[in-house]
Length: 351
Image (tube, rainbow, N blue to C red; front, side, top):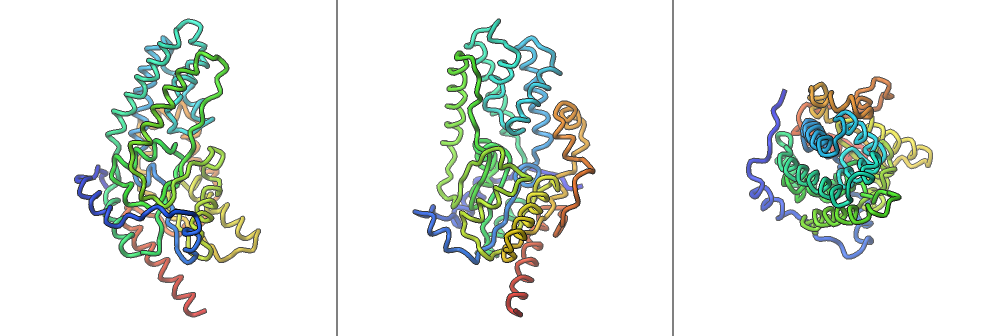
């Protein structure tokens, strides 16, 4: 099993990447002229970044701190976090404390100022833990090679993480300059009936906006936030990216660790293409199998016992999806892309 590590020289990688950065087009017409270009869609968590164990460690530790502050059983706080995550997204931390406090009716016994302080502490715990996020071995080098060798390929991160989390995660790991676009989930303000939560929510929203503003994303050709209903396995994100980039006949390759998300999203895209008799926009699913190496880690299993959807990611009831290739290391993706694009060009030449 390969070992995972952080980039050893992020500044050096950033300098190299900036030389290939693209300027943001003045209007979407410029994007639509690239009809022969191809798209590589990359999942973020457990495909580019080794997130699973980090996520489990953070949530279990942070919810234990919350349980102590809220004077509630840790198991209850974990279950409440799972309920919040089910209605938003697993990696949405912006308003988690406020929503948990509301469900526990803490505002009846604690001041809103105290709840706001709990939220601030949760945020600080997240910020400190997030600094430890790791990338898989060879990701930086492979992305740089793909960009250099395939000029007609646009690399877009399509993730179910919130936009502000994804931007910070890509920035922290030095990956942001190596991609052309990011499509992530929009963070919506929770609808809490009690007026006293308004100040808490405003404070959390300011933290989210500040986190987004500090990331330099000017080079991105595409930067969109989409509603959580568009999350994978829906193909809505893929459709938006293809439309915005104006891809008419190019190849689409989607790489991720889950058949239940990226694999099914590709299958849904394929089904819609057939329904509309549009066979010129093929899509290929590449499984990042190395991203599943720690599904049985004790901390992840502990968290999965509280969040049913995590256990569901290993379900055998998921319908079989076509897999172009299954990667044991991220470095293998470059070969898969080259083989796919070259074979397609050959078929077109023969035709």
